Image 1 (spheres, rainbow, N blue to C red):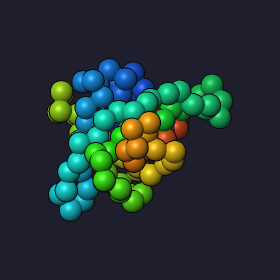
Image 2 (spheres, rainbow, N blue to C red; image 1 turned 60 degrees about the horizontal axis):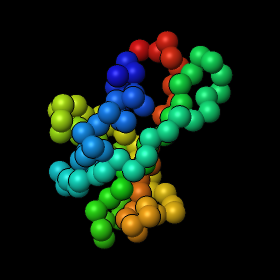
Image 3 (cartoon, one colour; image 1 turned 90 degrees about the vertical axis):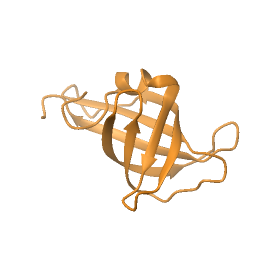
Length: 107
């Protein structure tokens, strides 16, 4: 963990074959497969930056919102701002992306 209540890049990449769930504030849930997680460009050496994209099931299109990302392999849960991004996954599924940028010594 990053210490800020968000999954680290390593934790995302170590997820159970990329299997996660997204849940909204109304109790709806969708399976979400980690499509990619990659380092980003932090503003300076005191910051950490990375992003993660999650592929949604066929036909599921969600708006930008705060969703709970659930890791069924460990029971961990994180509240994240996720936004739809393009282009879609190679198989046509919609992608939702979270971008993480925080001070390393925070938390």
